[in-house]
Length: 331
Image (cartoon, rainbow, N blue to C red; front, side):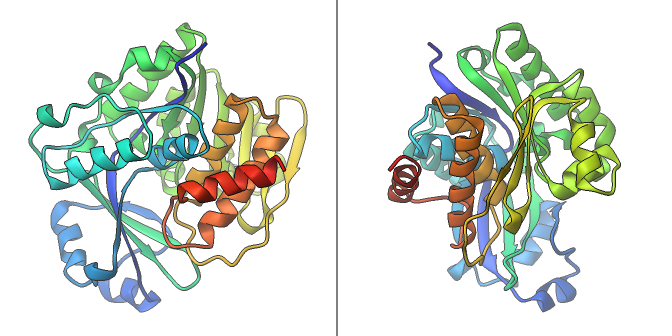
């Protein structure tokens, strides 16, 4: 028996989420719909023109959101990350701990520096745009991996955003190697179309021969494979992933279980904020397949959970909401 269902590795960012109008992007020269890396000065200048009193603050990062979801549904998760000895770093540790995620960092032994922050700007069309200052998490490296936790997990879950730095890419490759050598399955999420667009070759290095499970949305799947339609893209993905999930927004998702394709229907919802929808889908799906559910059942759970996420402000469920969704899955 493994101690953890999922051990995630990824960036540690305090999400500061707020609502904006499209004009905000024009006035402040922000590219809508993408995650853009910025320096601290640029981020601070944006923060000066937003209403921080109405902003929602939460421990985030793509893989962090997913391992929190695993925990909320009743699974056991661990997270490898890096934060600094500052106010937001201590906030991050407490928030993850309160969310039931196991961590290895000692609050009294954090490094000096600045904890990463992500400004999440949500527009009326429910689209999310992110400007991220990585801070100390840009130095995430092999030294931040807990190899014991990886070995004692059913799945290693790798966040695609780590691909932006050489040390992050090295950590991704090393963690994958440790997992494979110890019979631990490897899941990877592309995280964002911009990652696939600008870091296509580094992803090839990390994936190597294949991964056990790949998460992508439609745009990422087509960018990675170089195909302009989903039917061709999904055939290409079979070459690099034993199983994969392609999320399709309001059209649900498509799952390849290693033999056949499974269409996952969407659940009716009123979308107001897409931030975290893909992270929630991955987390709920990973919880499902590591806790006795079939790929179809896990996809259904993930679809229900992500439809709930987009109907609210913020990337995380309440504990009672996770229990309600599980009850709907298993009436």
